[in-house]
Length: 558
Ligand SMILES: Nc1ncnc2c1ncn2[C@@H]1O[C@H](COP(=O)(O)OP(=O)(O)OP(=O)(O)O)[C@@H](O)[C@H]1O
Image 1 (cartoon, rainbow, N blue to C red):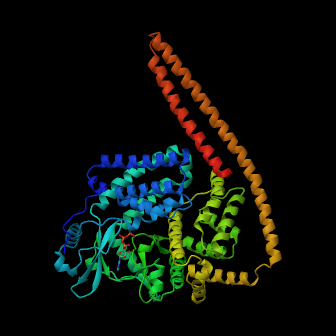
Image 2: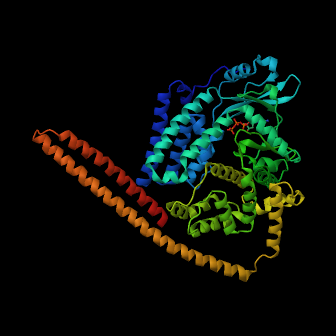
Image 3: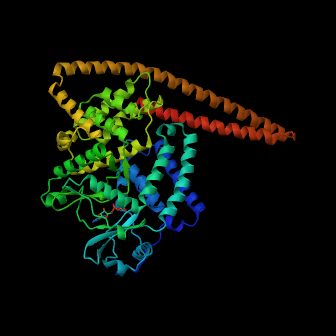
């Protein structure tokens, strides 16, 4: 049965034909968000309840702005290191709140893409979608051969919308990059570039079908991983037909327990499959949110979505392997060295602050659940280090972090006390069977051997205590370093204050001159006022800079 009542078109659907209206809408929403964040900080409306209301407003706005922004929101939903917890939680609901679109539109897209009427293509087609996602919706169907399939249909007008949105967002990002100095540390231009590239690839279902085939091939010898079969004859850029493989949502702990599946087993399976994707295959699913994975009734892990895949360069693969084992060994020096080699951290004369940050992360990451809130405690150090500009976070790295933090969220839903080391054991064991001659795999074998040797000669408690003492000495160095950073901070503030004072004087003097010329009916008053206005603008800029410095300083000092 076809649905008869078409849902009311959302704002983004109405704006498709007017780039100007879209530009205004996006800019107004961005300005509102900036203002709200600023206002809440200034007026100290910091209660969790208030933040929650703001976060709900943001979710509503993103849903209204449509797919591009829903995707951006989904990415931000894992960044507890950047956003307050209420925002992280609210953004996490985004993928479950995307409205479906009219099924008659979906059918029209299928028929025009595949070139035949629906009944010629499918023996049965359920017009009520089983899922609506940000980019498309999924319908169940049956082929004339009797095979049960799902048909993923892309939202209408998506390509056009992406082109328009990324142009507008690009302009905003360039503008922010110019006027907000701290934005440059995050390389927001490259992140925007890479994000738009990845999203554009994600709306090509032929590419997704190829990704699914490659992924299935990589897991051909792994019975516990299921990748639905693709039907290329029924697949185009905007329609994807694949085998119907039902399952329980991967983070539905109660549902799994109810049918006798141990959530910890699923955790091990998920984590090992990711280690294989990252370290062994160099080809990984960059968006492991709970909607993209499920568990079959016989305990297998199903992967559904291959739109957002990322590749790790072969040259980095070995280094990733080395880092993995360095993390296991809590070898901070080696981790930092690998990050430098990978171009993720720029070397500088004194690497102590970087080592300290990495040390804290490795300590927390290696044998405990990754406590997202723990990032808060290193945030101040991160700011201090960013102040010196030693970090360069390439856009690709942000996607890897996104994938890992999302996966971590799923793992903690399943088992709040999960232990990465324990979960990774089956993968580490499987290294023993890997032939050493296969490039990157040889490195795996070498590192595994090194790791075993390390375990045998693990330092005794006295040695560990001495190492801790050394580490503390290093922290002492850091304090001296921080003190010199403090002097630098004070100098920068003084410089800004002097500039503000200078602009205030110029502006005031020019305004006064303009007023005198105007009263005396002497020409040139407009020129003087113009100078007053320009100096006034610079004054405002210097004051904002001063305010921001204050905020950063407060964050570092807290
Ligand atoms: N082969 C399949 N068999 C059964 N259900 C499926 C299948 N593929 C997808 N689904 C269902 O449809 C939902 C959405 O699918 P999918 O994640 O591929 O869509 P999407 O548009 O790429 O979503 P998003 O980009 O927001 O992650 C899944 O969570 C799952 O419930």
